[in-house]
Image (tube, rainbow, N blue to C red; front, top):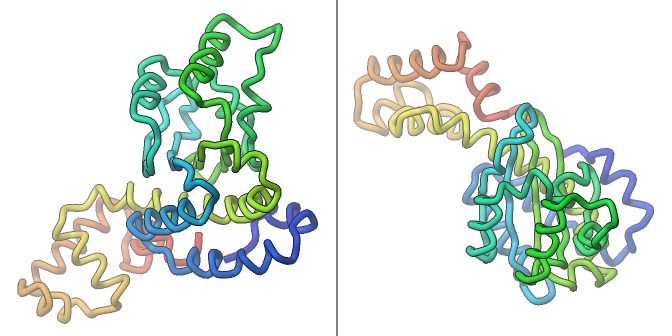
Length: 252
């Protein structure tokens, strides 16, 4: 995995201890291939942080920024807050979401009342205070067609120097992997269950079409038909092109 520009710029600020602790996390990221792997990684990260803070991973369309964020993985986020946030479309005024991509965003810095705040923004900040949502950390990354949002709640993720250092270096790489996994899952969702089985066996296990037919106890012509339908769905002519388009097997 190549280092993102954000990672390179942060390297100078991270202690040797934080760098050493980061190595196993980066290795785990390299092995990640689907949303189950991503959830397991986030659970491990959550439990490794002080207080096991609630953690959320979401994605937004870069083409339609006004569209409500799509929740991908929720690890303990307050349900009432999520419901209220969606109903009020607060992503339209949330200064954390609007703060921009490529750096860790400290909630308490963004949620301080300002004289020029609109009425809707004042309502949002007041609601954050009532709900205990004034402290946390968010990282936003624009990757290909989507915007990835990784957030966690708590004063410790804001204020503990070691935690901040670790997260500042880990989150850009995590966002890269999350974008790839979420994009792949969205594209795979277009397939039928049987097509997904055929695809995984052909691409991830490297079986031949005859071997896939034997494994699934179906005819070779049926495997060929599924493959033809998947190629047509994504507008490609070969299995290699399909694998690149759907699974990003070349490291995109």
